[in-house]
Length: 320
Image (cartoon, rainbow, N blue to C red):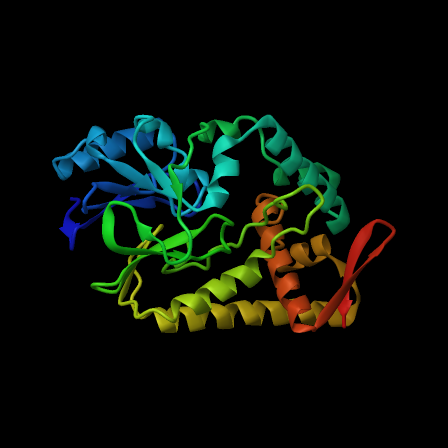
C-alpha cells in the first residue's frame, strides 16, 4: 500500500533490469510533482495507475515532473503524461531526450572507436552502442527549465537542487532543508554501488567525462549537507549517509588496488583487465563491466599510480 510520509509518497515500478524495481516519488507542494517516471512499458503504466489510485490520484493529477537523470528507467515513461505538463531537470538531459539520429550516430561512433582502443573483441563491440529501438524510450520532450546547483525546485518551496554528476552526466538530487531528506535518484542506493556510466563527449572530438571521479566528488559533496534520510531510486531508504559514503569509497579503492596489482605483473588493455575483474559476466554485461573497469583506471591515473599509452592502436595501462 502506498502511503504519504511528510508529503512524499514512494511508488515502486517494475523494470526488466537486474537492479529490479525503480522508485518514483510523488511530492506535495505548490504543484503536485512526480520525481522520475519509470520505464515506458505496459507493466509500468498499469502499476503507476494502480498505485496512484491508492493515493486517490490519477496520472492527470500530476502537475509537473522532475528528472533525477535521463536513464530510461527514470525518464522513459514521459509519454504517459500530457505534453503540457512542465518537465524540469539538469540541462544535460536534453541531448538524450531529443535522441536525434545525429546524436545517436555520434554516440555509437565514439563507443566503437573507444572499443578499438580498449581492445574489446569484435563480437562484443555492439554491446556498447545504442540501437534505434532504445531511442523509443525518449520522445523529444523539452525541459521547461534547467536545474543547476543550488536552484530551488519550481513548485516545491524549500527543495533545492544538488548537482550529483557521476552515475549520469545529467544527475541531480533534491534536498529538502526543513527535515534534511534527500531524493537521491541513483546517487545513493542502499545495497549496491551505482555504476558510473561512460557517456560520449559533449562536443565531437572533445574529452570524454570521467564519471567515477565525478561520482566520488559528488559523494563528498553530499557530506556537506545534514542528511537524515535518502529516498533512493532503487530499494530501501538510506540512513547513516556518512557511513554509507565511506563504505562505498573504501570498497571502490580496494577494487582499484586490485587493478593496480594486475598491472604490476605486466601492461594490459582495458578489456584484458575487465575480463580479469568480471570473468563470469563480461560477455553478458560488456558495457557495465567495461565502464566499471574504466572508472577504476581513471581513478588510478588520477592518483598517479598508473599511466597509459597507445601502442599499435591499443591503449596499454601500466604502473607509473
